[in-house]
Image 1 (tube, rainbow, N blue to C red):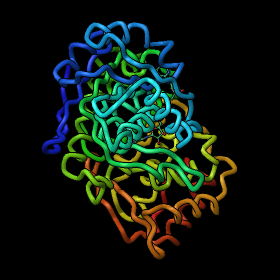
Image 2 (cartoon, helix red, strand yellow; image 1 turned 180 degrees about the horizontal axis):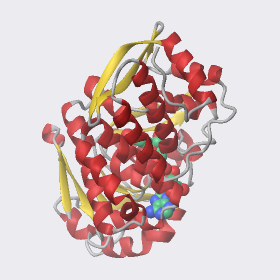
Image 3 (tube, rainbow, N blue to C red; image 1 turned 135 degrees about the vertical axis):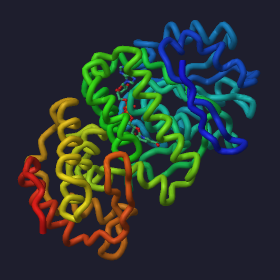
Image 4 (tube, helix red, strand yellow; image 1 turned 30 degrees about the vertical axis):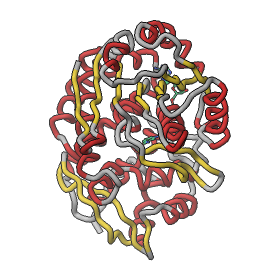
Length: 370
Ligand SMILES: NC(=O)c1ccc[n+]([C@@H]2O[C@H](COP(=O)([O-])OP(=O)(O)OC[C@H]3O[C@@H](n4cnc5c(N)ncnc54)[C@H](O)[C@@H]3O)[C@@H](O)[C@H]2O)c1
């Protein structure tokens, strides 16, 4: 088992990463000094696949955990679900001493974390992320929240977990597209902070995709360390934390332009990274060889859904609604070198427009100098 420490003063916590952690959860969480029984928030899919062994292990230390099942899918990440969670918690006698276990992917983590941040003005929670995306991204950093009619993740809080257990064996049951979606976020971590992680992925991609425990442990550990390092120095998302958004400005535009139906989040980020590489080349950033290397690695993971038919106007509107857009300029992350990121606040939106119109028409085209 590996351990990553998220350093946030009195709210510091450990992320434990390895195989078979669910079976050892009672022991691993025992040091948390929780006296009351936990409230496990999960969904039917995760419960069916991994709940039996986990609850059995948990009961060795906390005999009567409450289990709250929520709907499976992004559409359930809303305030109605949070209200149902509060109702169940009050019904089962939860109080200020209670604590929550977020057992599932990023959707469960965001909702359960938000319920923990707000129930009785805040109770502790522990993350047990079961998707690759949740292990390397959403479970670390304390951003919790829900979607509202006006947009995604617009209501939420910063509430750090007490600890996180990333059991890499849970990833073996993931649908291939979900695994790939998380892998693009791992590639993003390498791209912004660690060329050695990219080297590793290039040489061991097949082992990772085949869910070999050692390979999964390695990539989850490396990506978590990168996210933890960034979050530790910039908890409330200013300049440094922005580098984690590499590929996300255009990625979010693509997701919104297709009504969040065509792409998994990581797939949109993958296209966003490819586009940012091409656009970066036009700004004179990153050499051709390094850009081609990263594009090749991204395409090796799995085929990406096509960009066919996506309207530039829709992507543009989404980018302009993004909080990174200010009066004609877009804030975007670029790679001056592989393993290094740079935030630019002065990206000319007309230049980005021109680039995107060419990119959407021909995403495979080699970038051209202007
Ligand atoms: N808080 C943050 O910092 C942050 C960062 C990135 C993403 N997010 C959020 O994360 C969410 C996406 O998370 P996600 O990609 O994990 O999606 P998800 O939670 O919807 O999980 C994807 C699917 O996999 C299933 N699943 C979960 N674990 C499984 C397992 N071990 N085996 C088989 N199936 C399993 C889920 O039930 C679901 O159907 C979005 O809502 C996004 O906004 C949050």
